Image (cartoon, rainbow, N blue to C red):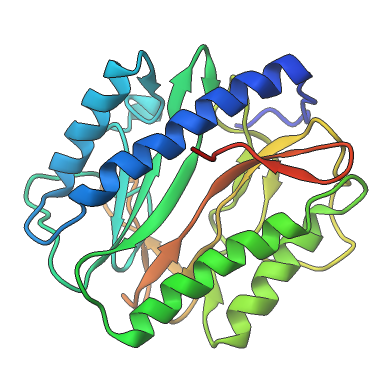
Length: 253
């Protein structure tokens, strides 16, 4: 269970979150050229682990509640929490979300990005573009006095205007020296509803947008969530802090 109390971070703690976030962003940049047809998701995982250790950081997912790998690799119909695997070889036209969370000096930098492997048809490119735009529309709603529902409403309105759907079961979350804390940040919702945002709150926004139905299904491994209709799903994620006058994205290189 996530702690229910929303923790307000000090400027010192936010500086630590910024350092962790910057390293997370750099790790995604490092992995990007490796996302090619013929590469296995395990190769991406192993390089992420090597790079993270070389930068004196730790991979938060590794061993978290029993998760067996250092990053999540969610390919095509996988919504989130895909487990890297030697037999899963990327092919031209695939999409893959890579979700990384290095721990630096005790604090978590959590970010993810969906990459297109090689060349994909326009409808696939559109899903990825819309999902990334959803993330930034959600971030644009963050400021003191806004409500959590404002974030979800902005994302949902945009995604659904293209005929896509928003995953309900998985949401953004508070984050600090603890990986997952209050508050939950749904990517759907109603403006003016939910908890009020206050300076010093730090959380992830990580919309998962599906090509078809929003419904998901959990695979037998207990981690991998897939779209029920097996259509594509894309995701982008940043960790953000509520500032005195707006928002700061903490997961920038």
